[in-house]
Length: 471
Image 1 (cartoon, rainbow, N blue to C red):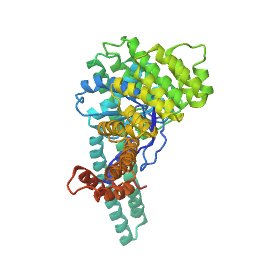
Image 2: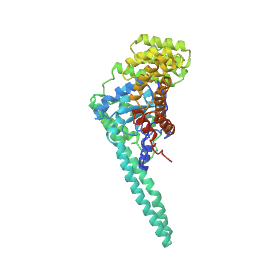
Image 3: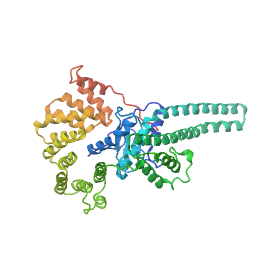
Image 4: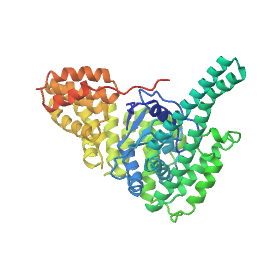
């Protein structure tokens, strides 16, 4: 598992776009539970893990196909936050909190949330909301001008009453605009619910998980919101939403269809892995006591053992997992990660090589293998490290650590031009555009003009970062 705080870059342009970003950063899946604000420039903390990301790809594939979005290269990004939350801010990514994955008892519950978020993307809700924002702002500006005109007329006539009317006209547009936008967003949420059920129907999956998830959230929030103003909510109030969702979900012909035992096991392993890396050892032992001999329980205990206890004990537990499932690439990955973090990189190479060779999408494991090859300090591994790291960064250009390790590998070979370029790419992927431009400018002096490396460096050195949100 790789935990990473890379920024999720978003292009900020007009005021309407910035307002849209603030609105859509709310939890589209959970109704009215508040969300923690994130630093807009740094981006939220992101969890990267090959096993979990593969499972989420398998969850979303039939949904995206049913929505006609299978060719749109839409990814699911995991936010390192324990609250139950999921949202979209563009048409390329679905964000879901680790807490949502850890709380969901079945694959179908997560699939239902992903289907809802896909409904927002398929419905073009973000672009439509931009237009709604533009319309609302135009109306607000007109009303504001009328208010200023009324105050000016009052000043000329000496009438205080007209002045009060003008002052009221200045403050009223903001309230009206907000209510209008929130009403529009409530409509979008209901539309995404209906679309999500439709995608589940088309892909032959149950809508029960989606219904049960929102029902559980309704039970948690019903008392908090019983006195809330329904016109000041960005989502339909829980009772309204549950009634509408229940009505449409019960038409799902696959309501009683269960997740396969294989998929349920993968889901349980995902949850165990997240708990093992995120929770404290005492919490893990309460959740997965030694008496629990299931594979997920052993997985969680092995992770917490190597991370917080005796490395030999942890490795012994990981070896037992490999003995139980010799062909599981993620158990070999875990062994390599444990050895690498224990300062034994040379021993980590073999299990990581196995994991790279057998994982369906080994991009993140290739980065870890590259790191182990470089940390072994054996010059003969430099070329293998470069091969793995170039493949990883080509497959996923948003991995700062991949570029950073690639820079070290090129440095070992004495290729300073490629080392500077990779360092610039690492800084760019982190969102450190100033450092990226400096390193790219230096890299350009080392490449022949017009060479592929020179062109890449030129792109970075001339990049102008988007304007940040200003409050």
